[in-house]
Amino acid sequence: MSSLVAIDQSTSATKAILFDEAGCILDKTTREHRQIYPQPGWVEHDAEEIWQNVLCLLEDLSDRQPMLLANAAGISITNQRETILVFERITGKPLTNAIVWQCRRSDPICAELRDAGHEEMVRRKTGLKLDAYFSGSKLKWLAREKPDILQKLRSGDALIGTIDTYLLYRLTGGAVFATDHTNASRTLLYNIDQCRWDADLCELFDVPPEALPEIHESFAVFGHSDAAGRLPEKLPISGVIGDSQASLFAQRCYEPGMAKATFGSGTSVLLNAGNRLPSSSHGAVAALAWVWKNQPTYALEGLINYSSATIAWLKDRLGLIDDAASTGSIAATAQDNGGVYFVPAFSGLSAPYWSPEARAAIMGMTAYTRKEHIVRAALESISYQIRDVLEMIQADDIARFKVLFCDGGPTQNGFLMQFTADITGLDLVVADVPESSALGAAMAGMLGLGIHHSLADLTNLPRATETYHPQMDAADVNRYCLGWKKALERVL
View 1: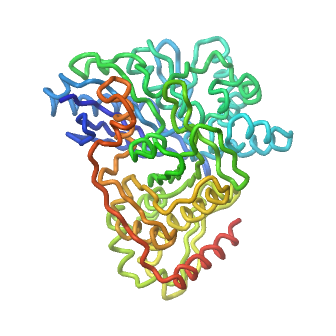
View 2: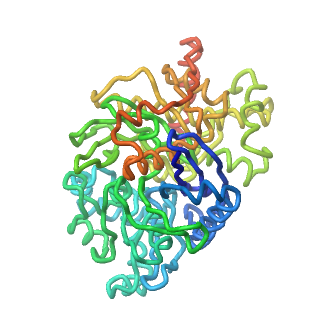
View 3: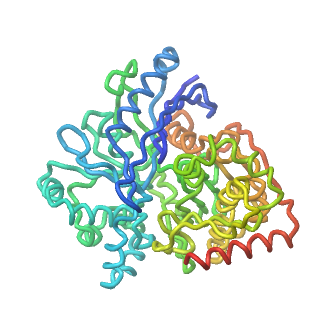
């Protein structure tokens, strides 16, 4: 039986997971990396640290599973999507820290471009908002603030990449400079209708087109690597796909109208919109789900900046909890939220509010308020935002759905899942494997490498799920949601 290694490079950590050809996990290992906050609203990652973590993880997995790795079929990569960096052509080493998707340093640039009348052109070409969430404005900031880097990009001494591109370059010793459509489409430099880099967008964001990678389908064979000797032999790399699209793929959402929510540092809600480019008048962004045999599958997406990252803030910044896993039991000790609402606008609010100026607030506290209420309010904030995003997506009348497929580490939190089912009024079908992004990349790799031959083959792979049904009384749902809306009004 074939096995395949999936590298899952997320906002908070990197995982290396070994799957068999049925999509079952054989082994996995993980390493966190630092979250760097140079000043309020700025978020960075050390890309060299991430690369060294990848090498250590693959070496660890190879030491633990030498026979399986010796017979592995390939390597797949899934990654945080909009995070961007510039690296040297010769060495592959980063010239700056990666600027993370959460980073708001380029808000003034977005405002400047909106004032100059570019917003509609950007939306029409990319399907995205002119927002600092996406990569283009971050690159324009670099070009403006770091002219030496812009010069290196123009001379060909430096290259631009999302994290998948960077890892591909390092894994292949500089032989492969490429990305896939799902990651390219998050940069504000990609024409989502024509499925290619766009010269007008590159000019708008001061990006030399020659510094951008080639674009391939997620299912292509991108190259070969032995991870600088950490693996027993060179393996083909196939199954390169952004993390949210990877989880949509893993959830078998292959038909239009199927939707999923990935609970991570942020939350991405994706609806399969079929083969025609959708448009939204209510705040959703258009996305490429994947491109298969030159045929694009599109999606509508709602983006939430802070989900489990809110819980990490409670732990790492306030010291209010010891670990994220305890939040469900802590929240359950409170009969209700005690009137406390937590709006996690640490880097503004994305869909459907699109308010980059909003700032986080905890409201409704009294002398009665306990730690449990604040923890519960933090978890509840995730559910409220998902409800608002779902209402936004359904307002475009592209699809109506009664089931939401869910994945990601926080789905192991029973309180969060039940409250989300109650607040959204939907059945939540939760994947038994929380690492759905890694699974989706591995499944794409299996398709690309011929281990499986069709989407139907992948649909028939075994999977275990747990379903949460709405249980809360409608009056209580309305009361909670009204409190949330009032809290939102105070920060928007």
